[in-house]
Image (cartoon, rainbow, N blue to C red):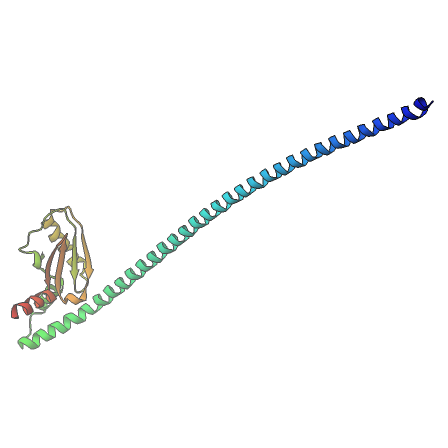
Length: 223
């Protein structure tokens, strides 16, 4: 009776409880493994996110630096272009003003010459002399280059005290190109400090036929 009514039901209850406990332990182990795997996966995802975010930051920094350099280069280029335009405009305005006063200078020079020699010169001769003084051209030839040989194939820069007229520039250009063999370019600039005549630069060679240059030579000879 005890075995049938007490021990057997008790053993069944104990076995059931043992199975329940074992199942609970297994479930806990599975849950622990799942949590460990989840934490491991979460750490991997976080590490990948950090790596990716670092790459994004580096790329953004590099792009920002490149954009900054481009903006700076563009700004410098625009500033240089504006500065060059301003210099060209100032140079053009100066040459225009010098061209306008050239006639006045010619009149003053003729008047001074007349007072010095106490006689009136022929008007055509007067203008020819003054034009020769400022342009450095006589009878269609650059005076300073009359007895000067130049090597060909080089570019020439001509400096005058006042802006040369188009006709004077053409005469000077033609004479220089003949001496250089034609394979060259001729540019013109204005420098009032030379007073008159021309300064011709061909490569590293400078042929100084300016009034200031002749005055400097005279001063040196006098010393």
